[in-house]
Image (cartoon, rainbow, N blue to C red; front, side):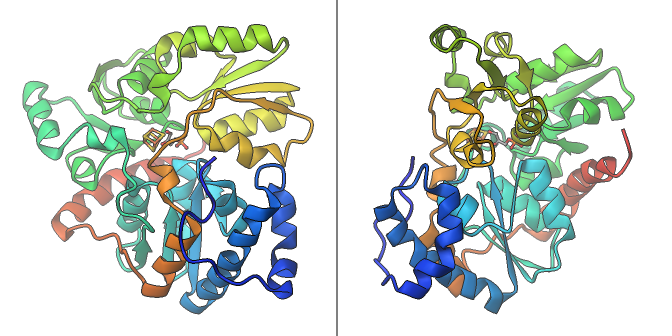
Length: 342
Ligand code: 13P
Ligand code: SF4
């Protein structure tokens, strides 16, 4: 697990701070040693104070470190949940504890608000895999074929797309277009998964998530053999031969909902490693066995960086107006679909 406060300044710990954070520590005591919490707690209290002062809301993805997830987040969710929450907040400032495309999406639906990304370098291998120019070239090659972009893309790519999707709604978004084929980008594995769930022809780009592409079917089989009775939940960014080993395939929030409903006794979460640590406390009767791979981009977000962002109201996410207006359309089209009952 990544360090809670990295190598930043050590803030003094007082009895008041210990009291103010005791309840939150109880939620993470299984993964954060007490000595590490003594470093985190003063930052958490400082962030609480700044959050009130700035009328800020902190949104965090399921892959954030437990100190962020349980210590400071007002809302935790998958990419779709974060976008929906960002669209409805009345806070003046949004701090996105996640990667850059998540902060950019929050900015697109909140052009008037300040959106902070505590580390602008928190990228994503999928977002890096394609540019706006690539999409324009694809459109030339496949005229009259709508472009569905995963939210794990830059605003520039969203601006060249017809509609966005997340792993939670990709099949629904593709089918909502009422066409026989779509360009689906940039994740080749999510594209394969969507193709397996629909009759719509999927033309895929060749991007991949650097975390999920590392899982292998042999690894999953070995885990199952070593841990009899365990169920396998996998994210659709995994390769198809890995998904073939899974009992359930879904977004990060989808997996959490599945666990809540099915109450399995042993679970292998084939996704980024932090998520098991974050949700284990809420499921004391579930044993989480994880092949542990961390997303280095997600782990760039730390408590000291969040504190600095709130103090300075920077780094702010900025999207040039001519890109924002077109990118927003793609995101809002997806969010509008969420308002239609299934
Ligand atoms: P979710 O939308 O399922 O949370 O996935 C986001 C992501 O980046 C997975 O790697
Ligand atoms: Fe991107 Fe993969 Fe990290 Fe998700 S886990 S943010 S898809 S690199």
